[in-house]
Image (cartoon, rainbow over all chains, first blue to last red; front, top):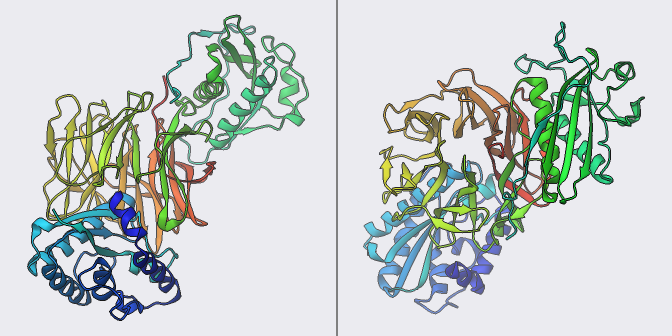
Length: 168
Length: 436
């Protein structure tokens, strides 16, 4: 869990999570990147930094209910991610798959895993070396948005591309 | 860790002879037919056990609460009692109990032995037949006071219903605290009535879906402690943990086989789908049971070990399937309008409990093992994960409302829903077998 702790200590990640939570319950809009959330800190992040990836590229994609198909909007985000990851090859990558709460626990662990694999496969198809990529499923255990309606569920059905420090 | 289950207990069970009416009666004794559709709860008077200071009243209170929560008994308020029992071994004044419509009467006593053990005895009386129905005496060490009461409740339940009881049992579950987007989850165990909670993990890692071994003080569960989520075994008494198998990907949804020798679970494939494997705990050999490009998960053995019920979305959305324990003959059995998951085979073998999502609701239901005769027992906005009491008459599940999940029990009629008290939020309950 050291990696997760390290990420959440990152102030940008905390801001992003907080913004997602607020946006989630206040609006029906589905944000698809940090830029959609007004977090594109106008070049504040050093190019090639984890912050740059999260803020300027967008670290997450969203899925339809009970689906692991990569939507058109998500393909755009993943293509952008792949381009960045191919430029900054020092990072190892973990793709986290998540599900919303509208499914049972074990099924959602499997669904999250399938989403992570779909995102991983897309990145590989865009040239990211599969040796750099790992996946993990959190099922419905780590929601970012916590209200009880569709505006939150749509944000929790996600795959998040996380940079696990400089790769091995 | 303090030993939870070990200091076993019943050194001796002695059947107490009847003081009156030694010959079998010509008329039927009071009994409950739990197979009738609509059971009228049986009025029963449970007097305070004599002696043992507060312990006598406490035993009576635990027995009363157990029987009442079953929905099959209507304990009569003590303030209505006419006769004050002074000698629990002597025949009561049956007329005094008939007049308050107590069809059954429980008397008993408790005392401390010279060696520190507790001696508890009870007698069950049929007031209308004017006769003792049952009487037993138990010895237990001090730490097992509540167990003595549960064992007495089980004996009364069994004598009056003809079915095994389920009160001397425990439940493993996940204790949840903290905000929903940063939940702390701890493995925990308690008595089936919510008493004697003990924590089995420290909350630093996500832990999920604990399940009891049928014959050892052992559970299998899933944990994120190594980073990659995997299935583990935990010895409850020693705290010793062990990874189940050495698979490349996530392992999840574990359950024991009925003989306790295997763990069946899902293994994530590299393509993102999940298949079902069984692992022999002695030989460590694994057997693949499904091989589909779909999600196959939540396997549960039939009580004779010959079949496995599981969830699969191979037909599009999640449905329930049954196969042989070797993976043969995979057959879909759920065809209702909705999504089905978390199937669990009844310990009696006759029913499969499940979670069904339909019309924006989550329902807990049961069906026959061929998928026919579906009955919904409970509906709610967010609830899932049934587990069977060992007698196959009651289910426990968790319902998420008011900010987090809580445990609920429901009987097979669906009419008797009871909250299980827990200090924090609680999810993923799994019922133990009857303790020995």
